[in-house]
Length: 183
Image (cartoon, rainbow, N blue to C red; front, side, top):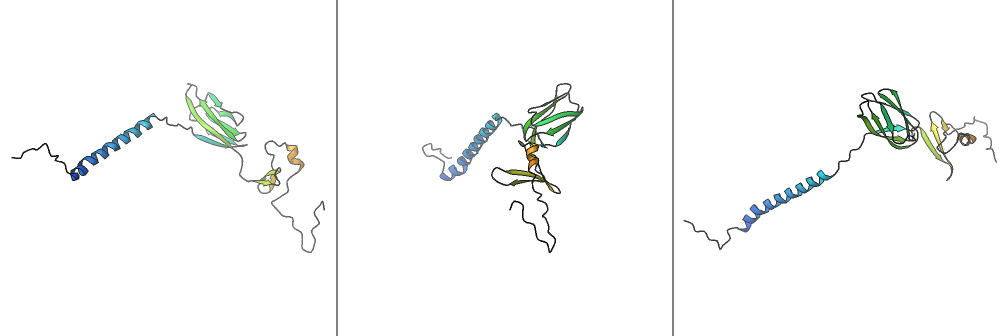
């Protein structure tokens, strides 16, 4: 028969390391996971609306899955909308910027709610910086032609047409190139 002695602890250092510390570590992990789950549950989930990108000066068609009764746009100076058919919206980008679009059906339910981003036309465009204050934008296909930029009227743009930068002037062999005008 074995006698129990309460005066001497029966736990060795090895027993302490192998038995108690892993349980403390698991309990700490449980507390950390519970804390993270609580914090994430209280955070609002950001619901971002889908994004439709439209180029300024271009049109984009949007097909709806059912007919719309009400169309609403946040900023009508950025994009213009109209209903082509009962279930087809046509958007025209007016100027670069962002707005939102909302389509509602005949029962008052939202058909589509999305963000509309109007981006500037950049395809085939070349910007020429002639000086600090003189900047020209050219549309190049197949030849470069000056564009009227925002804030510039057509008279200003046509008063000084940009040089044709797509082809160099060729001089037949044996002839001299005439001096540039103004010399």
